[in-house]
Figure 1 (tube, each protein chain N blue to C red):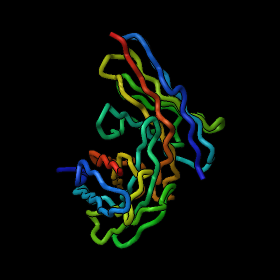
Figure 2: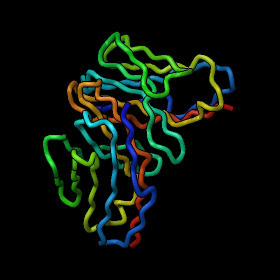
Figure 3: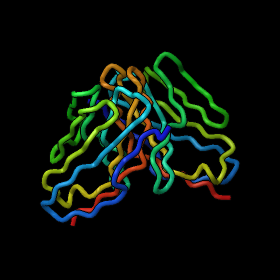
Length: 112
Length: 113
């Protein structure tokens, strides 16, 4: 089992560029999440999904879009990157009805 | 929505001493409280959790206590070791709400050998 994987691991973007972060899980989890983590701060929820084909906004959704076309994948898109989106992005997944989130290794994104 | 506050933000202890990290939450409906450990440059990893129907849970050197009336929960680490040095995050959620976790701001624990 690979668990939760993320690609890419690192990325540098220029302001205004777009990109997609990919999250994949092989644990057959229903729920998937995208968080961002800024220095000295906790994790903040961007968007989440409770099942294939469904998505919902979290605490800080502005500037991001997501899609969950397949149960095992959850994509996070930045349409027009801004320096304020420089962060470490973590994907996570969990079983239906339980709270324990299993995290991916993270993607470090820098927007210049 | 839920708000979780975590204290202290940094904690330094001598190897072998105990460490206690406290969190308070605002939503009395929250019923699941996990704790995560994050080593430098690594992903957060679940180390222990507690549900609202119990008051305490132990796993070897770590334990978590929950006071629903006061809306606070704490992580206790006994006989600390240098490898316990990391950032610890508490979180709270209502299980019916898509398991959306609200995290505390984190505590950097440093265990001095």
